[in-house]
Image (cartoon, rainbow, N blue to C red):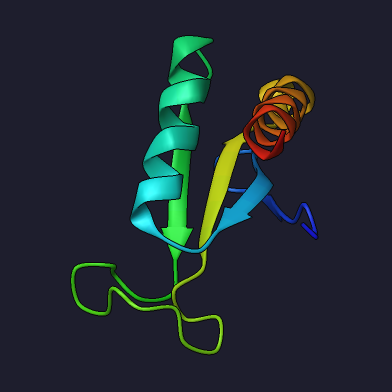
Length: 84
């Protein structure tokens, strides 16, 4: 699902991928509530192309390497709750 590539310039690790700004904001809020700063990276700004076509709408959630394990756990738990 996620390849966990590392951004060596800021020591960032990808912890999750989403397909739209609404889901991105939910995850950012979740992480911020646990004082885990995060960044997002997408191929196309959502304001220009708010559609998900052929992976172009994909948004990566990045956190510092030291926070990655907790961030992944929190996201996974939140997704499980949402599905049930």
